[in-house]
Image (cartoon, rainbow, N blue to C red; front, top):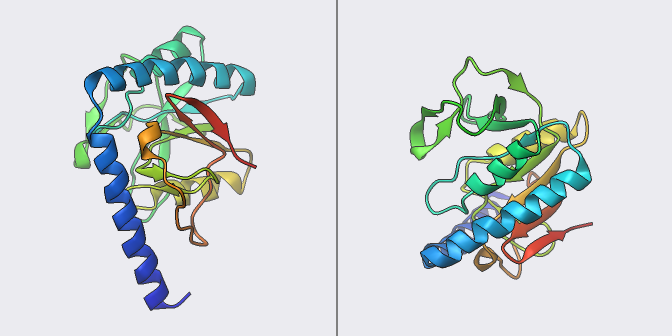
Length: 197
């Protein structure tokens, strides 16, 4: 892929990202609360079916769908959970054990992460944040490539199911996909879960 093609894909992704994030930002508080409860119910049912050893969640920031109710349901069911931590730009994420109520530390970009003292673990089901998605498993993140690198590393050594968490308003007809983009196995919105392939 040449530089011009890469630049045009990056520009298209940036425009689609802005479109989807604008739609997300326009959602009212009542829709957001109902969506959080809906993904909690569906997400807990998905985890019960898949029976993963460890589930990765994320701390919602900047208008992302609230994972609090889902985390609470998983904790009630005794599911082992973790959160991602950014170690270094350009590197895969590292996951540290976490449960609702555990201490978190403030990081850049408004992120909250477990402290370095929390045990490092390897999830086999990841609920993934995103800016936009399509119905074929394409995902547009926030531009850092962290989840692409992480999923590539995890999938090279074992199963790693990636389920995007988003509002239905973040769906797009078609997301441009590059060779390094790792596909989602499904997306969970307030309308339920859609799985791919």
